[in-house]
View 1 (cartoon, rainbow, N blue to C red):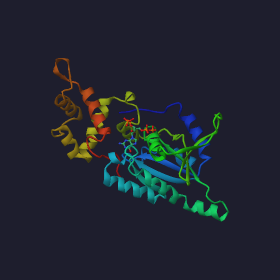
View 2: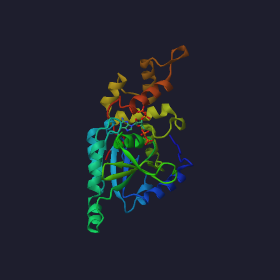
View 3: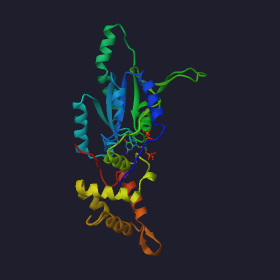
View 4: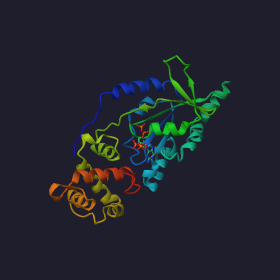
Length: 279
Ligand code: G4P
């Protein structure tokens, strides 16, 4: 499998993010807990120099718990403040507030010594498409949030969401596209659905999933298939199509439909809690 992916609007988004970064103290970066490295854009390291850094392992409800623990420690060892979050259900979201405050403790102390008291820290959410930025912002800010900044009638300028007394969140997240020369990074992003399916052949993708699960999560895949995952991946997919009743005219296995079902089930966590990259 070989694919390239570099959307043209990436440059514009990157420029906008560089502008926004100047306004903030802390970057809250979302990564997908199923692929904590591949879903992290490397450009952010350079852009975020001198900023306080928080990494949220989002969608941890879909990832392998023991692997997520290791990744959390991995990022903490690198000096990040971290939290596990399920933005969809809201689990872990509330704790992010105190993680951000903890991350900013030294800065607040420095400010205090300089006579700056009670100035909220300014934060921005960043991450690749589909990692859960909007869902997180909605959950984090909640319904009670108050927008600050612009007065009615003034269209220019940034919108800040006030989160209690201590944090102001920029309401537009920084979008970064994943970057990869390494094909395996692209493959993992395709598997989690961060890269649109149209540019990849869905049966090939399902084949790669079967291959990975067979090695790393054999019990999960066999449970899911309902038979032993032996033989070529394509044969397994054919057998699975018949089992799921995915048939074309003449009772031939509709492997494309079966592959789509399998990918949906995987992305929805129905095959199990699975991590695609391990330390
Ligand atoms: P983005 O702004 O970064 O592009 O991502 P967005 O919030 O739109 O989220 C992308 C998808 O990921 C959404 O699913 C959202 O519900 C889901 N999601 C976000 N955070 C979590 C999480 O922690 N756990 C799980 N399981 N899912 C999460 P969707 O299928 O596009 O929409 P919907 O059907 O859920 O409404």
